[in-house]
Image (cartoon, rainbow, N blue to C red; front, top):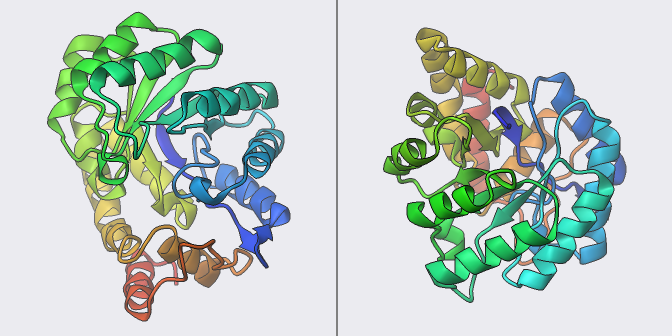
Length: 293
């Protein structure tokens, strides 16, 4: 259902409020540069610091501006099941094509709790769900047997996973149990080459915010089996992939976008702050290596 280069969009702020004009411009630019879908209100979109009304407003803007040109996968996850349900209903009403649902964080549900949480959501809202497993942030880990059980229970609702676990063996476990129809999407830009080689379908990307054409070309080459082109593009992007995590994300990528584009502010919301001087130096080097500055 979903594949290729899918940016986890930043949320532009200016003076502490959402810069809607910049967000609309970002959406148009991403589509023009070859991104295959869009994710508003994910981790990179600073969802934890968005008010509910802001989050739902961003769903609507993204769907409206995309205008059917690419799918919109709305970030709807929460560690409160009823809040996650509310976000899903709002995303559905806005016209989103799917919901990105992160594993509940902080309260650390068991695997049985994860099954109950995601099953309840799948039963309540007619909207495809892409699971989001990022145990480095949530502590909670959606284990392969849980992912497989959910996809078997709800084949038309649980349609894929954004896997940022770093465990490449899960690709094969999921693939053997669920086949090619279950979309396995990498959650780490610097692992995307190997992930696709193992059967992945693409990447929900941070780097694509600032380098959408390069990321789209890399994904196309990788998924078509053009090994030489994929390796060359991966090597061109690799220092930037790593530089964008030299400080708390999305500080470095917002700095990169301000540097390259000019119309995206570096502003982030507390408790995040602008990235450090050392991070800026690493980002500048990564941008130069990629040929973006």
